[in-house]
View (cartoon, rainbow, N blue to C red):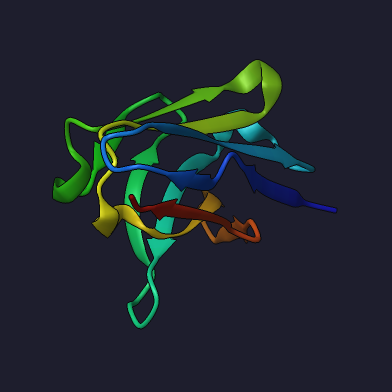
Length: 115
C-alpha cells in the first residue's frame, strides 16, 4: 500500500513562485531517492530535479538557479521550490520515489505560468 501524492500546483504569473509538495507513505522514505518530472502537452516526460537519500541534488540546466529540491524525512515529504517561473515551465509536474528496482509515481499536479 504505497501512496505518492503531489500538491501545490496552480496558476502563476511569469516571475512568480510556487512550492510543490510530495507526500509519500508505505515506503521507508529516508532511503528512497525523490525526483520531480514534468510533461508539457505534446512533449515527453523529462526529469527536472532529483535528490538522493544523502541529500545530493541535481537539476536540469533549464531550471538551475531557479528551482530548489529538498526533503523532510520526518514528514515523509519532498519539495520543489520554483522561483522566477517562466511560461515554458508550464507542465504537469510528477513526483517519483525510487529505490533500486522499485519506483512509484504520483498523479501529477498542474503548473501554469501565464500573464
